[in-house]
Image 1 (tube, rainbow, N blue to C red):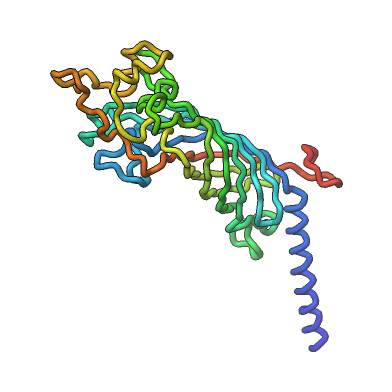
Image 2: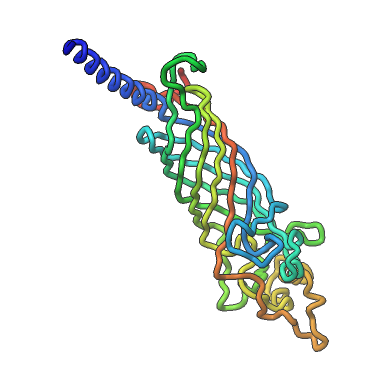
Length: 311
């Protein structure tokens, strides 16, 4: 009896370490991955928003402003549960006061679009890992069933470029050179940089089809350090001063870029009624987000540890 019991104990220990070694060897063989995907992009800032008073959270998103984005990149597993990924993300974001029924934002009637080009690196943690089951993965068959769905949490840092534009008289106009809030001639308002830092965070749900292919859906908000993604942040400047202090567009275009309703805001004495009145909120930075559906392809490592397309 003792011999039989000893046999099962040793067999269990052997089986455990054999399975662990095979699992470890599997992720070591396929620790490289390339991926690419597409999905909607969202913007949260001064422009547009929901039909209530502006809120600095996701509840203020205006779904009519949804646009499209994409990405491609590569992943490398440092450990079975920990990976690093580098990605290039690109897309378009948009916001328009025409999309909201909130009175003051609707009356402001400012809109924009901006391309986003972002390089970011991130660290990913596999919350739930995949697992191979018995050979045929059939219902009713005893044995360990496969785990096909994997969940990740990630965080990182990125560098991105943006360029807010407004459509005026049928033409898209770059807004930064105009200085729509007086950035080019008011000493206390410096021109903003179109290159900035992002902090991407998020979650990913991944379906592992086989050793080569997987598919995922993820949500990735970006926390930003600028309030000028939409070219709106502080207060109105005089349209006449803006027109007089730039040479990139005709004066009437510059005035409309600063205040589409500037003509109706001129008092009988010729002064500008909205001078130094609130145009945006400088105390909250802008925010954008991508939701991506991605295809993943695993690369097998060769004997030297480098990725290869050979299976």
